[in-house]
Length: 394
Image (cartoon, rainbow, N blue to C red; front, side):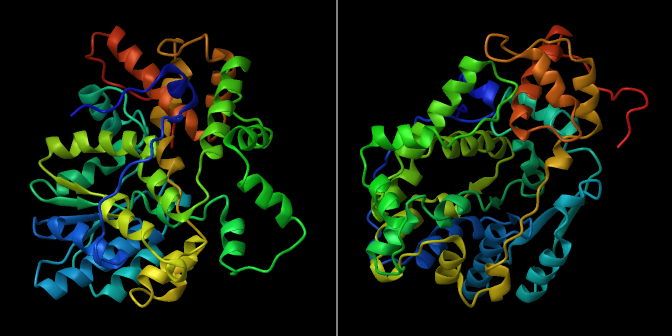
């Protein structure tokens, strides 16, 4: 299996752009979403060790909770939560939430991997992946490499796809009004008008809302990215079932999961993303009006209510590992970067240098950083061992 190739503009922008397709989902039969998730989880549980990539966020917590309940019901070994602890990245700290979930589920085993700067996108873990597979997306795909090592010969569960499956549609207000689940207000006429408009009109309106950003791109490239983002947003369907099928065909999910799948195959690990499972999405798509939800918390309560404390399902905060992915290794490489590995027709090299000189650069530039590292490593004959610059600390 090979990961889908990124286009030059996608490497420059750090995003997978467009190419979404609406897919056919299987017949869910009589399964509701929980039953469909259990069907997706069971093959992983019967192939131990079943490791769960567990950050303490809502998606990974619900996957861990449902897998734990299913394992106990079926008399199988409990899943093993696996967590990165990165003290240097304070915004990644979720220990209080993690511990609450693990205590609630009465789990005895928990793999906690302490890292300092090893998860940097050009640090030792990431560069081993880059040397083996080349440029993958997202640039933090190596985040799961230690979990795959722990799951070798078994299975790994992730919460990938949860953001998409449970987050509200941009047309959620119109849908809620149609279901008589919201009270009309004056601006709703404009919202309904846009939601019911042809794709071309939606695209024109949404293009004006995309803002600036991507300051390291040349003007033509920036405009092309904004057009692609507006086009993708404009194509989001209004109808519930159509939107779920559209979610199943999101190209960025396909690219991301296929890249991670390469690592899993080499580790002989069965990789399962239950929230991206076609059976689960089919069960979601078949929900009647009474079972549909119009926001993330509402959706998690509808599917997982009673499985975890309500404040965990309703929490608004989320950990960020950006500080773990950009540390001394990235700063050292950016400081000595020669300008290679980046398309100067798409990227303003000086603007990119300025972005990388910031304390915490835009995470979308990390794909460019890895592309530059690969070019630099290749020019050194592939034998280069990266070392941080003298005097560059944590």
